[in-house]
Amino acid sequence: MLKKYIMYSRKYIRPRINAETSQRMTDFYSELRRESQLQSGISIVARHIESMIRITQASARMHLRNDVRKEDVDLAISVTRSFR
Image (cartoon, rainbow, N blue to C red; front, side, top):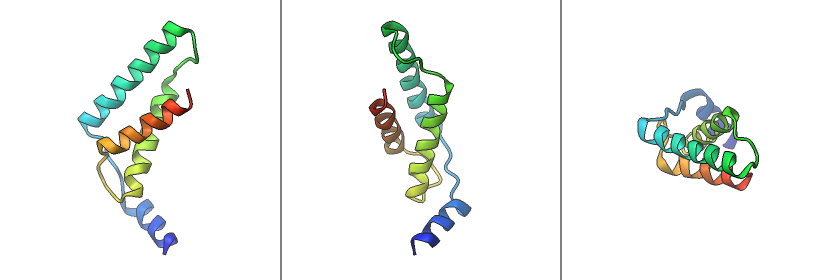
């Protein structure tokens, strides 16, 4: 059953990021960049935003949704914060 679930998700679910969720990720990324420059900590690069996008889409895909919601972005933000 799990295998069918995964196959269905990969084949039919294509999560899209709307303007609201995109803005939320952009704001968080800007905040990370600002903090990184002020504290001379880990440099934040474009790969971080790409990772956040993949995490949000994966979360939406797990819930079989074709749209990315605020909860998906919150998950990506919490994962990103945990690795800083």
